[in-house]
Length: 171
Image 1 (tube, rainbow, N blue to C red):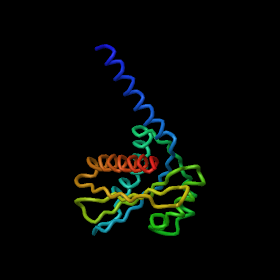
Image 2 (tube, one colour):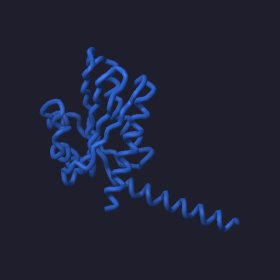
Image 3 (cartoon, rainbow, N blue to C red):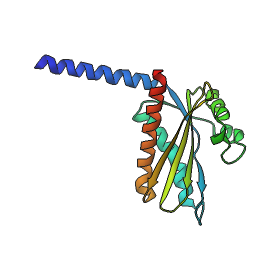
Image 4 (tube, one colour):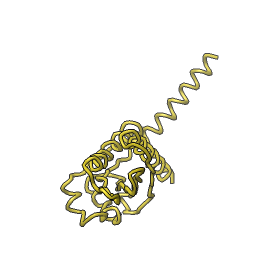
């Protein structure tokens, strides 16, 4: 019985080591999320603050839980590359160039789409920094009080991003 337990522990350690090492090799640059607020009272300070909190939360989850290396972009470089609202979201090639310039493998470009006071959508696009290819688009619906559900939505988004990168890297 003791040898079975020892064998199980070794196998579990190998699996975890391989998956963590695999993730650590990949680096991700995350652009600031944009707010597209279609409500009757758009762009309140509270909503702007929520939108600004998404990038650091996503960085933290991808770094700590999924073991990706987070590459920090210079905000001035992002602003210089951005020609207007939605430009970087729609132009994967430009977002990829920003990522390549800082040595990232992947770039996440995001948007918060608020169509109602009852829910928002977190949109994110995963771009290969090397090819400029839009690899995947994610949509996470977040319903309820922002202070309670935004973190859960960001965690779901991080899970989807990590899963897609793992699948893409297996090819």
